[in-house]
Each structure stands twice: as C-alpha cells, then as structure tokens.
Image (cartoon, rainbow, N blue to C red; front, top):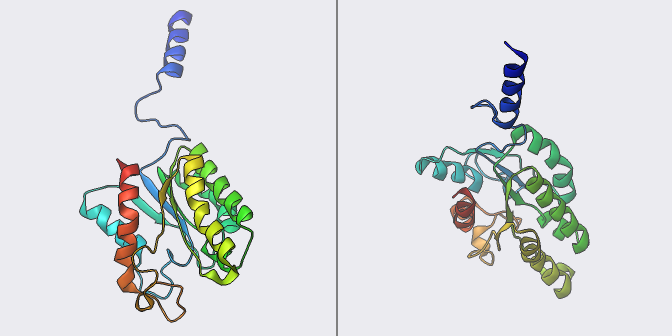
Length: 209
C-alpha cells in the first residue's frame, strides 16, 4: 500500500466510520426507569407494577425497546443523582424516566434541594444523549400549603426549564381514592397500576416516536 493511499484510507475512516460501529456515547434502544418504591412494586406481586405493565404494552405493540427498572424503595433525589451517572454509562438508555421526589417531600426536605437534584439528573441524562420523562408527584399537606404547592409546582418548572417531557401527576385520577392504596395510604394497590401506566404512556409515546 502506497503512503498516499494509506493516508487517504485513514482520513476516510475518521470521517466515515465503519458501518455497524457505534459511538460509546450513542444511546441504545433502552428505557431506564429511575424511581422509588412506587416504581419498585412495593407491596405488590412480582411483575404486576406499572413498570412491568409498561414492558408488556411495549411488547404488545411490537416495540423492541428494552426496559430496565432500577427503582429502589426509599430512594430520594440525592440517591438517584448519585446513582445515575454509572447507570447512564452502563446502559446508554435512549429514554430515562425519573420518578423521584416523593420521599424527599414526605421528609419535608427543602424544595430547592429536591429541585437541584432533579435538575442535575435531567441534565446528566441529556448530556448522555438520552431523552427524559419527568414524572410529577404531589404530597399530603403535612408541611403546610406553601410547601405543598411549591413541591407540586416544581416538576412543571423543571420541565419547562430543561425541555424534559412531563407526566404532571403519576396518581392522576385516583390520588384521592383511599381504596386505590395499600393500608399505608402511600403505595397504590395492584388495581391502580394500569391507571398509572395510562398516565405515563402518552408522554412516553411522544419520546419514543
């Protein structure tokens, strides 16, 4: 091989990578769910939670997306923020669903802190070339009206600020129905899981399209 031809091939490979090779930063056809006990099937039979139902719906519609649920009971936004970078590197998801904040709110943590953690997660996912679906949550008025309103409004502000897709309220349509909750009045029962999926689905579908 002549020196001129070799130089030409090296330049060509740099500009036009070999087909089938993907960048280490390119997103795979994976949906990563980063949530707390509501997404971790707390108190439910295995594979009956809304995330498992989401996988079933994707399969029924011949969508090949792989769903990875890394939700942990008791997870906070600070915990999710600490875990997310490694998860992004490991799975390279095309979509990240962030369902966090409820535990922070129940503990009365400063809204500014919760918001900063969620913002950091959204930006980390975006920097990893992942689309973001932010799942909104509301809390009981234990800490007063001002805190409750600031907390629930935080999700919409973050979505507008960052461009993330937003599920306004995961428990929309049944949040005030005690029959839809386990005895702790926090975790939805099995009958509520399809309703939660229906609240998430149209927003996720926009990202998948």
